[in-house]
Amino acid sequence: MTNSWRAGLQRGGIELRHLLRNGKEMSGHVTNVVVALLVAAYVSDDVPGTRTPMAHLMLAGFAAYLLFQIGLISLPQMLVAEREEGALLRLRATPGGIPAYLVAKCMLVVVVAVSTLALLLAAAALLVDGPLPHGPGDWLTLLWVTTLGLLAVVPLGAAVGAVLPNPREALALIMLPTMGLLFTSGTVFPITSLPVPVQQVAAVFPLKWMAQGLRSALLPDTARTAEAAGSWELPMVALVLTAWTVLGFLLAVPLLRRAARRESGSRLSARHRKAAQNGALPA
Image (cartoon, rainbow, N blue to C red; front, side, top):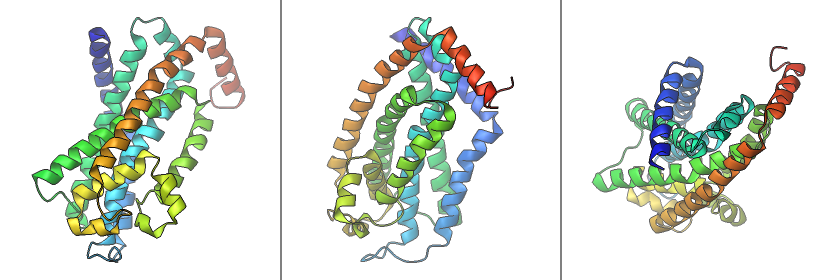
């Protein structure tokens, strides 16, 4: 297990260096931050029943969605693309390869997610008078909600990536449900403005609780009156995110191992031939 952690951290460091040299991928994360700032700049109303600017609620929601998106959209896409390139086939022959691979991907996603979150909050505070934690307690809440939120979605993203088909279909299959959660989890407007059945469905998934936890860290305490329960419900935030963390880890490793066992040279060659026929690869 120690060797797997060491190998995973080494691989994660290498992948981070590659990412920093990839301007296209880096620009994608920066673009998400720019979009959030532009939306916030054009929102001027207050959250109904409070004196909290609606822009602050939206920025807290976007912060949660960026963490959610990196774990549940970017990570599965990476896994599917690398599977198509034969990464899982190589891991099958490497002792401890799957745990090390998962550690490396977790490291990569956590660093990218935390960096993107820091960039969003700093840029929002400087450019659009965005919210920041008001004291040590709020900073501590921001830290543990971010940590638990990533632990909830990164293993889940790995599990999803292990079962999705080719990269083109993967994006289509995961984008629609995640966009649906964006609009039903109280990230872009108060969740109390949604029908109660929609609120109940959203409460099953981690994004709603990630956004609520981040709001508790970034918004004044008076804003809690706009929450469905009239409070931040931080114990429930911790409970739901912990449950998704456990579920994600229980699913991720066996599904990645199953995907690796199913890989073979003939399957990889067949996928490459099909991709070449479809124009996705040079023939």
